[in-house]
Length: 388
Image 1 (tube, helix red, strand yellow):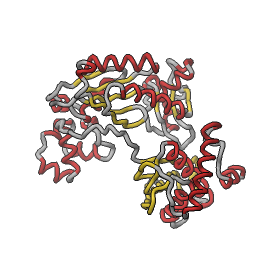
Image 2 (cartoon, rainbow, N blue to C red; image 1 turned 90 degrees about the vertical axis):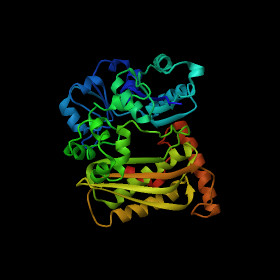
Image 3 (cartoon, one colour; image 1 turned 45 degrees about the vertical axis):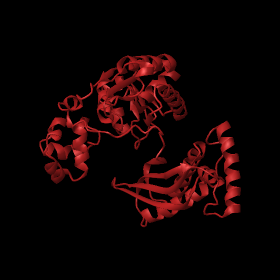
């Protein structure tokens, strides 16, 4: 039986939520970004995009292109609230749902036609329901594979629906620019263009031996996607694969104490998010981007999964020392908890009694954060350094 996959993508999600919170922003060029010389654009409204502003663009460049833009730093608590409501609506149409980010996801509609009818009318009703209940526009792509459905939703923007009929995936993809294919980024596109592969169909028609010779084994999966051959399942569990936080500095940092302080704060934020979602981590990863833009990561697997700030930070601090063995200028620092699993109070690396005490402390601190905000309960070491 041919599959029917929906890819759903909320249009300019962060900007749309900001406009729901402040309707005076409607019709204005809006940029969502923390601001500052080192930050990037998270989302730009269509009005700002007319000036050339794009997501992931350096904030300073965006402001040169569109100096009249209204800047909002981002309200991630509101974004998460609307995201949860969005996915709750999607879950009423199919149990097989895979969130890809806060504002997009896949839905397997294959076996739901008896309940909700043909795919295209059902997508139209879903789109209208999201608009009426949340005030948000969603673009929907419908196809027999995830890759074709995603490209279809991109082409359907803004607020459109595009269906690729079963068996027509390769014909739909063939004339599109090669950069439209998921997995073709800034590094891969020049290589493909250098080989004369300008359209997705050019890659689809390339024999596998030539693909392997030019792009390696990974190129075979890319070529299969170009032919519309993508049988990857919609993961109904929708499980997070990692929890991370990072910070880009306005001025490059060399001071080890400052780096340790920031790492501690980022690790505590990661720990708080783990506990909020009932997760524990078996691997800690630290990411460092130097002033020359080179990126280095260090990771280490833990003997026991943990959600405790102190254990996570102990590992992160050790990994940072490995990544920064010499005095260098750092522009970005990040920490991630990986290999996630459902949390259970563990003996951890601290010992049973100490882990239990830490667990009680974390539970009390998290209750304060939940009621009064994430900054309401913090380690004393963070407070002292913030004052300094």
